[in-house]
Image (cartoon, rainbow, N blue to C red):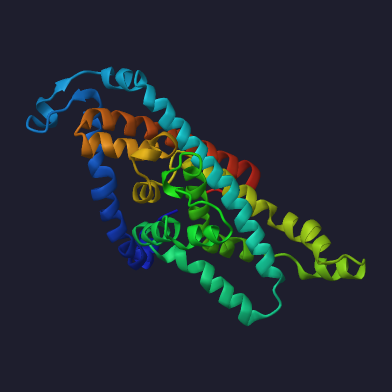
Length: 299
């Protein structure tokens, strides 16, 4: 319970929160007034207060657009693939790093795989475009084996997998930190007992390390449900092009083009609001599941 004495004692800590609170109020809660555009035929010259009120017409129109279902399907499929393959890759990487005996080699590998996490998608996208271009490193290597050049960023079949693999490239390194911390908390006497019983390294990983990681795996998977409609706006915006819209266009990029490029502000706001409401439900569900199965709670 917050009392006057405790508040005075903790005042410096509350003061440290002030910049973050102000930032959130200005850039997160302030723009929420613009949600009203989703229920209007918004005209910038007339503003929020004088634009014509149309109720749910924008939502009905959005649901009548055939492309919106393709966009939702792309969003869900890309996000689910990122969660599934990203989690598997992170767990496997953490297990492999845990088996490395040489600390110097382990630290070197960790540094290398952490690096992409500190780079923005503007930089990573430029690197990927050069690597995957017609005369890039990958196609030059394929050419040596007699394989014709492949348009990785212009092929609707391959583009989603490029997104998933490049997302893993950026995020697997940082994800291993959490799993390595979980492994470090496993009781070492369990490994000693397993060695006495004749268990090899594979058996130890299968019957001790993975079960020890199970709570954090369940926790991270349930929490990731809240972001299932966020398939990676910055990444896709940097890498995609009109040729791969049918397989790479997601809700965020569709809203960007409709709102900022085509100036259909009300339509984009309606889609954005719909996504926000669904995301709120998913986040609430994920926290409930995290509390039930992972004993995790914020409040």
